[in-house]
Length: 201
Image (cartoon, rainbow, N blue to C red; front, side, top):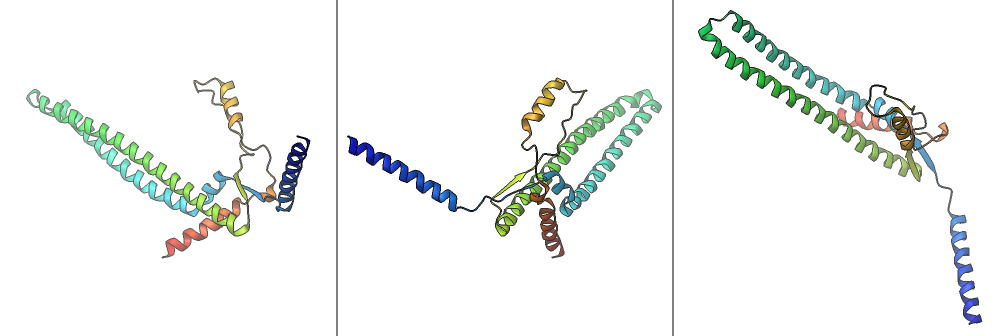
């Protein structure tokens, strides 16, 4: 029994020693951070995507104005029409109004969908670029920093202000980040160069 206990002790000590040696031999973990809001804001690709989206919004607004003008004309025609024609004009007015409301809902959904696709695509490209940069530079861990994020309260919200503050504090990931390990500009430069290569083709 004593011999078995001694052998077990020796094995445990040897195991701890091996782990300690392996840990000691491993180089320090290289950790860097980046601000995803600043990256997204400074991307040329995002500016181009926003410009295309503004073109879509302008077309939708023009079409909406055209439909509103058609409704106004029918309303004016209804006021000036003879009593025998009013029933037909009212039917047209109701139809055009329903079509305008339907178009507005469709347009809002399309714009929202386009914006969601834009931000999802940008995030996936940021992810891919961060991976490439990390592999090329030997970074072991890349974190999204939020140390400069302020705690905001919306007084008009139905949510109690205390809960708003506590929720934001609970979502905070970092309190302090040394600027020397921030690679935000490196990511922006890398992604903008990649975008220029793709758009030049």
